[in-house]
Image (tube, rainbow, N blue to C red):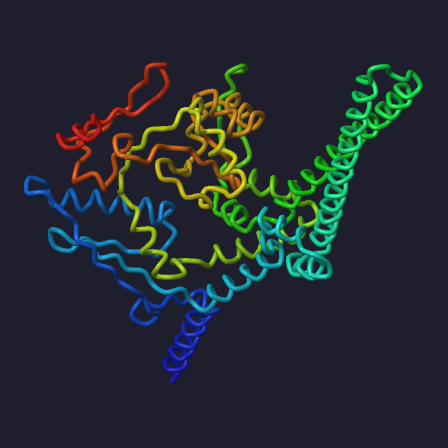
Length: 446
């Protein structure tokens, strides 16, 4: 009887410990894919007749993992099947993760709001009242600061329009006074008194025209300043999402002046601090977004949607070559202006394209290089290397050729890269040398 009681106590204690270890179950009890739900994708791999199938599949899996899950924190499995297939499996997110994601998205909507484009603003100020005020309320979306800026912008537009009209009228009067003076002087026997009166009228009209021109220029400047401010009044959702996803590891660079290794803030911290500085009134809401994101990421173990996996896999391992457009090219000023107005996706280019620089840190290797990038900005920093680069939403985009003879892409035939190695370019800078097969070499040389 005593042994039975002892065994019962042990069983109860073990059960209690087991239950305690899985509380809360939504966090500590991991369901298998068959219970929690999940998806599997099977991809075929083109293995050449003279290639080692096992080594090829292992290499492809390594590339895919680096693209899909570089940190190794997601529960995404990749397994070779046979000699030419790879099965990729991922579980679906739990209810807790879905709830945390929804909370993050809600905090994000509270701080970002709709982004104002220049087209929106220019269309707004051209509207007559009361439609203009109604449209301004719609664009402000309840944001008091945004509404005040739109009102200031509308007032600046009205002042600019009035100043332009005043200048046109003053210039007409000045032209008329000039013509009258010339006629008075051209008389066979000019009347000195009449000439003097016309000279006085000419000076007065010219002075009024000069003042009207000054007022018009000042009104133009005020409108341009308000227009520039309207582009950045709202926190950019794209920029904030990108900043949150950056690495939180501190950056270490060598100071070429002291020879010491300097630890710099992580890319994530720098990007978030920059956003806070640009939007001081929204700092508390930005912090709430960061906290919601961190809670969501702490519990996240998989991608939110199977389509996210498909999108990540679609571009994995695709190698393209495109020649950079030189900063001295005649078409560059116009392309820069269009980019700054509409961004990388806002223009349809036939012979060129703006391509994102995935890791800007690859373009500097010491503290001085980083400081120069920050001081000059992306456009001037890269112009020193004869490249065309612009910044949009905290990311850098380079202008590259995208026409036959100046590119080598998957659309140019089934060429292959046969080798690559670290080297130096003609200026002694780090570079990558590569070797192509016969087709690739011919296409590259065309």
